[in-house]
Length: 344
Image (cartoon, rainbow, N blue to C red; front, top):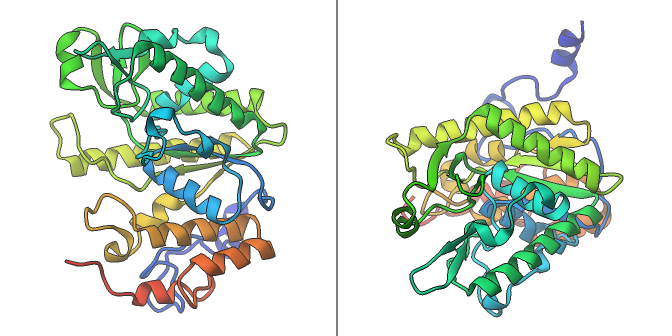
C-alpha cells in the first residue's frame, strides 16, 4: 500500500527525538522540503502578505532575486521607512488587489473605499499607511498600486503569506478592509462596517479564487509558494483571549494552505510557520514576542533558496549572510550557540 511506502520512504514521516543527531526540531526547527519546481537565479519573484512577507522579500533580494513589487514607493514615503505600506493580512484583502488588477469589473470604484477623515483627507482602507492624503492623491496612488500588482503577471514565482482572519467588512462596498477600522470611522458611519472572524469556507474560497486569477492572468509557467505567517495576532477585537484567538487564526489558515496545495499542482506549501513556531522561542522571537528575529528569517529563506535553487550563486550569497559555520545539514550551530536576547 502507498501509505506504508510513504511511512518507510518519507524522511520526515516520524517525529524527531532528542536522540537523533542532528535533530530537526531543536533548537531550530528545520522541516524537510520537497520542492516541485526550481527557482532560477535572479528571476522575478512577486511577494504578497504581512510583515513576515516583507522579511522574506528582503532576504530574497539579498540572495539576488528580482522583487518588482518591492520597487514601488509612494511619494509620501520617499526617503522614509515603508513600515509595512504594502502589507496584506487576509486572503480577502489580497484578493481585492488582484481583482482590481485583472478583473476590475467585479470591484467597486476604488474612490468608494476610502475612509474620510475630519480634516477632509482620506485613508485607503486597503493599506497599512496612516498617512492621510487628499481624495485625489488617494485615487492616483490606488492606480499606482494596481499597476504594481499587475507586475505579478510577469513573475513565474509568486509567494503568498497568509496572516490573519479578523477583518472588517464594508457593507457599502461589499469588500473587506485590509486594516483595522479606526474608532473615528466606526462612529462616523456606525452601520457601515462589521467585524467578521472569517471561517474556513470563506478563507478557502478567497484563496482558491486568488490561485485561479493568477492561473488565468499570470505567468504561463506559474509557480506559487504558499505560506502562513508565524507572526501572531497581536490584538483581537473579540472577547477571546488573544492567545486563543491567534491559535484559531493560524490553525484555520494552515488548514486552508494545506487544502489549496493539494488542489493546485502549481502550488507548494512552504513551512515557514512551522520553522518559527516549533523553534526555541528565545532564538525565534524578538523581545516583543510578536516578530521573528531577522537572523532566523535569513536562515529560513536561505533554506528555501537552497531547496528550490541549489545554484552556486545562491550558495555563495547565502554563506555571506548566514551565521558563520552554518550548513543546512549540520544545523544552525552558530545561531543556536548565540547569546540569548536581553531579558531571555
